[in-house]
Length: 303
Length: 277
View: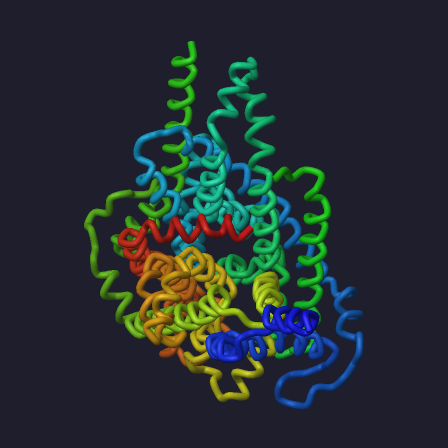
């Protein structure tokens, strides 16, 4: 008798209210549809398409791993990979360090925070198209603002967007400039979360400013560093608009990024299978890099 | 001694921030200056900062030379519809995750959150195929309809907020005989105005500034959004920087106004990115 009652109680604890579940289904229906048609479904479809040769007009032809085999030997693709890596390796750390510096400065209890914040946010809220047009003008080799300022300190004018060695660094500089405000705000929020007492205690113990920074600030910021690093990695590997608007991938493919090449393959040349294979290789790279970061997390991130 | 160090620190901070702020602002000042010049006047070295004469014609030129007005309206329509769709669909899902109990809730939520890690390029092509199949190529639908089916970030944001509201509210409403939709509509939505504003502002800005979607789906020039239009006509007016700068300037203004009016929501939205981590 007692066992039966206990079973019933346990059953009641686990069972869900049918009405509530139906309501949940209602409220979740848009998301479920979205998952099927716009997220998970396409992920699977894209995988399948990557094994075909398809131009959207005729029927897709199954070619197995041919797309992938071809891509590995495709000089242009490999170059775009290297270019994108170059972009990432320079822009992400540079952006993080500069924005951290700015955040530390903002954290010094200064007046006019709103004014400064607005100034740093102007590039953030502007579209990349507007920024790219502006900087194309600034980078103009004859009448651009940058060459003018450099001329004031006796540096000769450069062909920023036309020189294969300078084009990518120019895009990197512009992208870092645009993103500083955003990262700065995240750093600032993290810095403000560090209790003053820790610094006080360290000061009493005779720690120098640098030691305080090294032993208190950096470790306590490490979760944020980790987050920004991952976000930065994921975003910078997908860089597209800068090259698309400013240089079209040139000069001589110096600014051709993976996504730009992917875009051309898919929407200019209608090589859907080939482009899908590229998308998966990109996704794999991002996944592996993120995984590596997570593995290393234990070594340097303090929670 | 400590006060001296503090003052030095502050001065250094001010210098750094001022220098940084100037690097941010000077390009924009240059943009405005170029927009107010006659086309012939822009190619001078050394650069002239305050144009003589100040020319406002560029603003009307940009409206006539290219279908700028149409671009502006298209962008506005797409962004507004997309934002509304996002707010509704995300608040629905967030409500379910925050307040309803159903089997598989945690697993389902985890899946939704994981989708944030999928790079857009992986879903881009099949979604394009779907849109083409629906006959939506060269229409505005692909630009805002997908937003009506929930975004992981928005669901996360609103769920956090909903969970912070006292659950006694639900109980009181249930006693009064409200069903779950009424609880959502009459209680949770009105109380969530700050969170909705944050999500709305971020979504609107994202849609307004978006280039890839419109570039992929729009073919007829009249249907272009502002960003595609600007990017496209760059070819025709490659060196007419006064025109281009005017166009760029106008494209920034709506979001700038939105930012000035709703600053704290922008800042909140960014702060929430940190929590997401």
